[in-house]
Length: 161
Image (cartoon, rainbow, N blue to C red):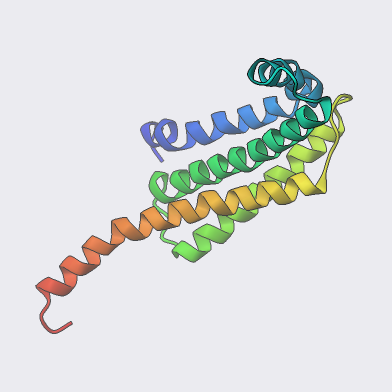
């Protein structure tokens, strides 16, 4: 693997892993994110209740989990699919990237268990796993679209196919 491929395909995935690690620290704890979300919601709707703010914050945090792992899976797919010379089936790539994303989600929750202001949650791992599947389904759909014109062209040029 040359340095250009490493930088172009693998560096974004490694940077995103750093973002996930940073998000698991005290910096992105519920206590810190509520400092921004609460005032913003009160600005939008001054009579919003504390219970409503808590529900919105929980929803935003869970969507963030889903999104960060969809992005991770997408970047890992891209790195393996385009940044290596591996010849593997799309289904094998799908399962492998999903498994790696799941292991990262488990490690991320373990990391959160070591941070005083954070808690680990198997529910968050499940959300992360679903996010990875969403990212992988998007990648798979783009991969099939990219391959389809080549297949059709081959069929048209070969009258016996």
